[in-house]
Structure formats: C-alpha cells, structure tokens
Amino acid sequence: MTFHEFNHHYKLTRAALTTGESPDVAAAQAQLRVLTAALTGTDLTAAMRLIDGLPALLAAVKAATPSPRSPQMAEALQILSEGKFDEGAREERLAALRDARRRIWALADRAGTDHVAIRGLTRGLETTENYLEDPPWDLAPNNGNA
Image (cartoon, rainbow, N blue to C red):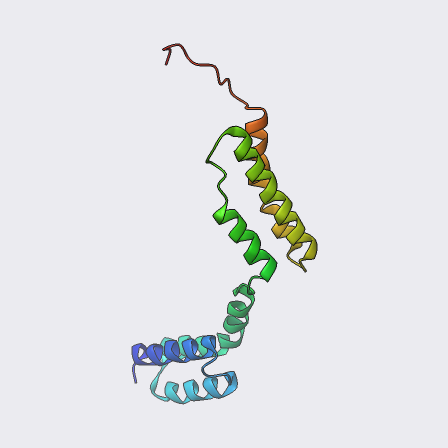
C-alpha cells in the first residue's frame, strides 16, 4: 500500500467518525494501523501521526460544531427576516422596528443560554430606529448641488 492509498482510507475513516457513522475511534485507529504495515520512513511517520491525532481532531470538530438553534433564536431570526423595515412612511417603519424589537426582547426573556445573542439581534434595529428619529445627515434637498 502506498501513502496515497492509506490517505484515501484515512479520509474515509475520518469522515465516518465525524458523521457518527462509525462511533468507535479506537477500532478505527486499529484498522488504520493495520494498513500502515507496508509503509516505511516518512510515510509511516506521517500515517502514524494522522492516526494518533484522530481523537484530538474529532474533539475539535465536535467543539466547533454549533449547537442547534433554540426555538426562541429561530423565532427571533424569523422576525428579522420577515420584517418590513424599509417599506412605508417614516412612522410605519418606526412602528415596525419598535414592534420587532419588543417581540425579540420578549423572546430573549424566555430564552435560555442564548438570551444575550437574541438581544444582540436588536442592535441593528435600534440603530435604524435612531437614524429614522434623528438622522445623522441633512435631509434638506441639495438644490441641484452634487
């Protein structure tokens, strides 16, 4: 077996372990070690390093996998995506922004550990609301001046 062939088997094994298709890391490592019998020198060293690093790699993948969204976070994101914040008169837009902020804060009050992240979703709404109430630029017509 060449290192290229070993690496192909290693990638398949790693994928099976990552997806949970094959849950036994020690057994997978043992099977991969059998495949290294024909390898020598730096190929063997590299293969053993890959095999020995599998548990740490899998732990890192698991740690990096985001946890599923809470129902409150999903609902807050839906409020943001369905909001009509740029339609209608100024007063209608302000009302939509305030309503969305109020509803998202109510969701955050009921949320678990992600309550801070849910409240953070309202920052953009608040900024837009502030700009509509007191624009940081002059809204006067430019009288043809560019």
